[in-house]
Length: 99
Image 1: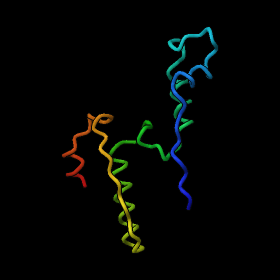
Image 2 (image 1 turned 90 degrees about the horizontal axis):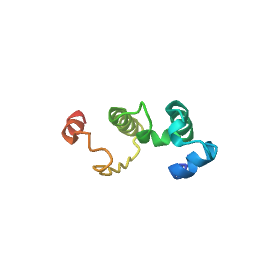
Image 3 (image 1 turned 90 degrees about the vertical axis):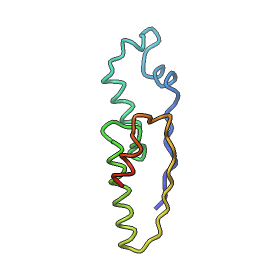
Image 4 (image 1 turned 30 degrees about the vertical axis):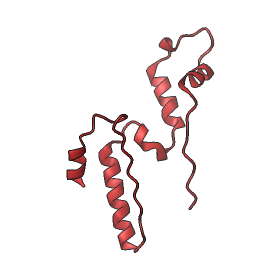
């Protein structure tokens, strides 16, 4: 199975300019339209940056991967990245306790 490269959205300004006529302001763009467009543009692999995907969802996914890996006796490598600046509202102790 080939893993696709990360999906990168263009800078917000260039994305907005391509979606909005020149004379319209970004303020006039309805949030529903812009959010729906951005949600459609992001693949499921980028779940960490999408609505309705929480930290708990990722923890359950990791647990399931470990279970299946053990079941099929496959080695699993996990990489943890500190997202302190991006996700400062997550309490690390609660995550460790749930694991």
